[in-house]
Image (cartoon, rainbow, N blue to C red; front, side):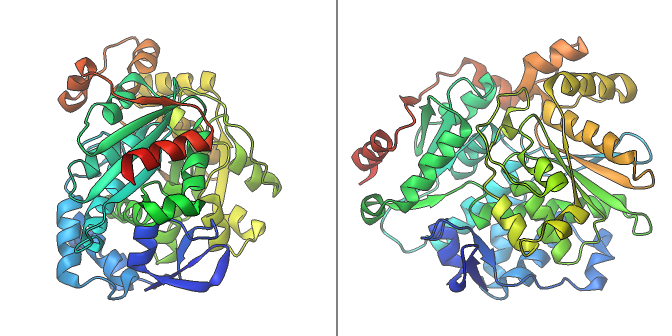
Length: 434
């Protein structure tokens, strides 16, 4: 398997190099050279495969021998350890619950797989690997959990001050050991910019082995494709169009779905469900991509004003707006309507949905107006208890908090406050890891 940069399609690297490096030197994003099609007898008989079997078949086909099959099976066995069940609201509306992992967010799939595969490629290297990750909410907790106490790897998580929920913050600031948190006095985009600057800084990279655990790293993205197949397996309907509704911020999740489609999964459409940060929905409607500073919302994990993975989406569609807009429909939902969506789902279906899922639900209802015959699978990306104040206020009832999250409330936060300037961040990294 070979991968290229979205900014230089003629410069190839191996899978191991792409994963351990995180970003190409030209600040593009790594993309597989090809997406081999999975055989029809696999695609149309998914019910015969376990979730782990599906993950193995996808990786085996995509990696093309880059990792021996026995090692690949071990990586998957140790990372895909929790389910992704479908809950049906009505005949056409389904919820794919992606919050059954340790941090109660969909990013557990990518983070745990990445920890395993990085551990595999890091074997025999005596120099410590430092992973930088920017989070707008859930990524930090998933990465902290996935890499906690991983030998030879340390993790630095950057998150925007005052813009993540209390329990989200506790997930990434209370573990200690090999996990450090930087509380950035800015936005997620500022955090992401600091991480990208670090990868491009020659002095840092000559002193510290750096890599990334955001969805800019291909190892985070690939395992997120697994649950699209798992969802199709549970619906088990190949006669009617099936669309996936994806609450979207940095657009890694929808890019993973596009990869699954590229490899043969017969997905009808994708619905990019955005909050007030509607950069990609605006592009899908107009062809104009206009990044802007992110706007804080109650669906904070999607508060991204310049989505990194949009470059991969463009690459997948050969930078052709017309083709992308045929497959992906974008909708933007404001906070007031998001709360109405939470309330409607609870009153109508007796189901408690989080703010991100509610954005997805309302986007699907808008999509249905012109596509009434399509079945929709809404990705519920986080457990509603991570947004306790909002959800309980809207539905007027207490939300059950899973024990693994509840215990964090009393733990002490440990984080270093920092501004958005690169030099202090660089100096901190050099002082702590060089």
